[in-house]
Length: 74
Image (cartoon, rainbow, N blue to C red):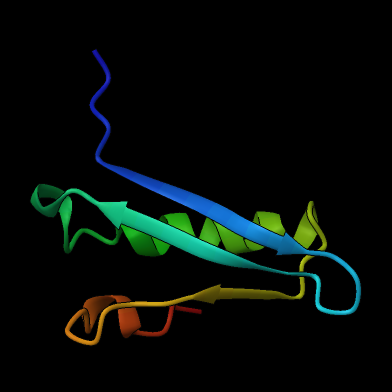
């Protein structure tokens, strides 16, 4: 079978002048530190920009989640 190791979503898509959305995601703790979230977020941001024509994606983290607060490569 297929193992789900995380989930990513764009929510609250706002059209008009902002063209924005919020990004939510989680990754199973057994799969952390492999760059999977960074790769997935990069792909989602590209799709949101190119296909959905969004200008802004916002993601929030808990204060102690320093890994998710790092800038994406590139």
